[in-house]
Image (cartoon, rainbow, N blue to C red):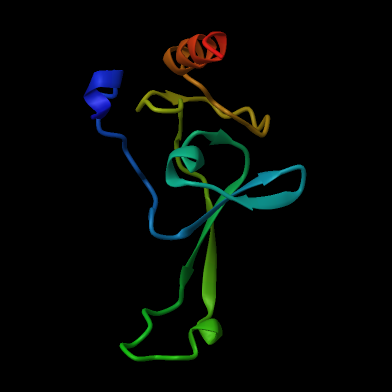
Length: 108
């Protein structure tokens, strides 16, 4: 379905997408999707459980998490084009997405 909207390339994810993904905005951490995480120009981190819970384990709230700072590549939103980091705490949009958002706003 994405082909009809021009999304032809498979996005690269250089981090564990199953982890808890967070970005920092003005000193506070916010959870984001993997698509936003790879394109957010700020400090980024992810957290994973220390071990996989066993089948039937009931005390899931006691599983310790390990948090890793992420210093991987920064991509334009919806593309695999990497860009330089400026740490401006904003999404790095591609010209294609900016044009699509402008068209979408004009239809309202």
